[in-house]
Length: 399
Image (tube, rainbow, N blue to C red; front, side, top):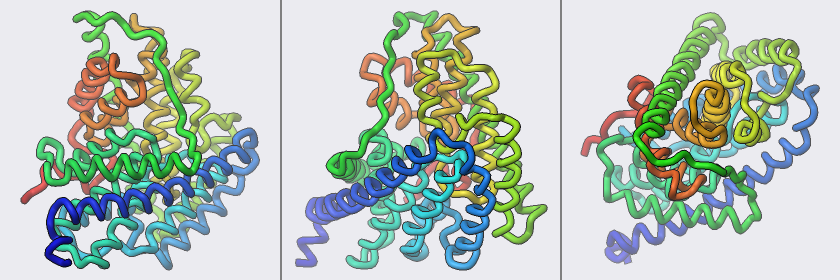
């Protein structure tokens, strides 16, 4: 039986099905809970005034019970790069509850970080149960990333490529390729069985395919890349400032929460709170004001740097779509098209995953957008600097 299980086909079929089903169910529960939270709080700004207290709870929880998992996504990437020990199971429930709490009180964060951490934590249980070696464990953790990403966004092919590319740009390990695709689709369809709704985005008008429009697309991509660089830079600046001036970690989200409350009070709007899906959709139809992307960028990086939990990707969608929409005033390209390429290109540049993000663009906006998405994502990636939002990311994966 052991010999049969160790065969590539049987082993990875069993693991893909098991991981895909479990992660799909876990992410569905997370998303359904998050939808209820956003539905309950979306038209109320008053809840954000309790954000500092929520931050204090999160800070204490991670300080006393979650020190081993406070690195989040970076811990997963470190374990793939240099396997040491299984990811503590407490990562999954802690990041789930902390993300729900952050969103309930209006924190400007995303959701993919939570899904990826839950996915990898669940996947790593099979390392223990089946006594897998380090090489198999690397692939298994990537399956957790793939499944979590695919289930949370409804883009299984992009999720599969993202899991591989985020670890090893330019050095795709083909041994992990097919399991990553399989587990992504299993998790995605499992999540759909829970009646989870994924937001749909559309481009009504694509520009004509010619050198001029491709050139304008690449020019926009350069700006998206610089925006991603600013996102990463501001996150580093805020994180370093918190660590330098507030030595006691639980106080960071408390003090950060107070600053956020003051900022939201003077902004006098809740469009930057939580995911900001409504504002993302609006960017495709109404030209965004030039400051909107920058405010969301700063609020998100500040919130995450303070110690609140969630993710960066949906805020990156917001930032990119809002910037693209604002560029409609300066570039001779359709409004919804600019919002769409900004949506994926800023994400591509900030995570150093242009291939996965171009594929995501195709999954979201259709096959005809493929070349435009590729040009925008590659241009953004090339102009964003080497560092991304994942500090433990590496440029290649040594054998």
